[in-house]
Image 1 (cartoon, rainbow over the protein chains, first blue to last red):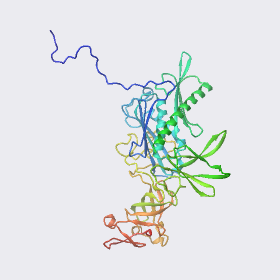
Image 2: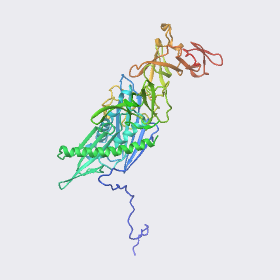
Image 3: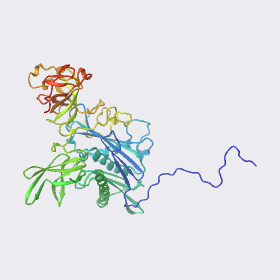
Image 4: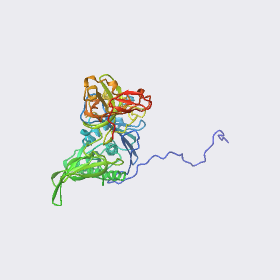
Length: 257
Length: 258
């Protein structure tokens, strides 16, 4: 009989073992993903926050107010920088990021995220209280399994908590809501806090919920024709989500004291 | 004393209580937001930081509302809005460098409101820094625009190269004392390493605050002889200090606190 004596033969009828892949938690279309918040993990930053949202992980550290050099400025200057860890795939990177193999600098997606975050966060910071200073936000994406707009929404929430932890004076905490409008065979349905975009219309809105629900950032992605009524409905849905997140953040912050 | 979070409403600026109008003033850690109530905008004092509310009577039916962060003792100066140095603050500084015209220093603490900022350490300068941020920090080094994601508020020439992150100051020779300003020799007033009590006379330029010690209560409060190598010295008159061994050196001394 021809038996391979050089190898240890496995018993018959077994299946190979694969590492368990992190699975998306199933959630209802109206639910918001479960989140975990922790502040002050980064010792050498003035403030920081760490968030796990389902299987996405975001970390934001705030440095500042720090002195500048050079000419006089009468209010703080703010910079935001977002980086994905090198082994993380970035949302839509095949479309937006040219593969030119550069190691330094931000990719186009990181650039887009940074400028949205700066636009949304800036109205809340009392810049005039920090003359001759800079405030730097460093965002690190540690794990990402969601769509670009959804990720940005959560980054905004995480950045606001980091600013509070740093003791930077802000008018209100900024939170975001993100919903998708999915069209299947002519039927439209709204998905709150989706995991992927599957060709639906995506809406991301950032709010100052305690300051008259002022909108500080808006990003709509998709090619649907939108009428006023539908858009209003989507923005209201975003506001609801933003308020829910805000009340959770409030509860966390108050429990920290 | 109740806890507040940023954005939380504390009190409207005018309130009628027991038939009297009470006025509330926004102090440290608060700001005024216009909040819409029944289609009318009402100015309301809200918190800007996480902390506890302190409301103090300051005058006739006038209260000052401030928020003090946790772990921080109550400070005297409830009106000032933050811990950054400003005009007329008394500060403690360490002399870093002297020349004939001026003494350079770094600001350590502000009397009545504590340390300015915690040094954020190697965060943006060491190995842990993000690769794309230039040596010297984030918004501060805008020499290369491709390295910075966003620069809506940043100035082109806002730069920081020094690793140390303290706010810097200058005491010019004419600001050392109020008499015989023309005869001052900086090296007979300060030495690098001295701890000096000074007053801020202006926010200065981008790099330095301008400080003055032209007052009896201001000047060197702690110093070691022989350029820092010797023993601590004690003031014997307004311009001499002595060690236990009897070494005498010249300084612009502050009047010791009673």
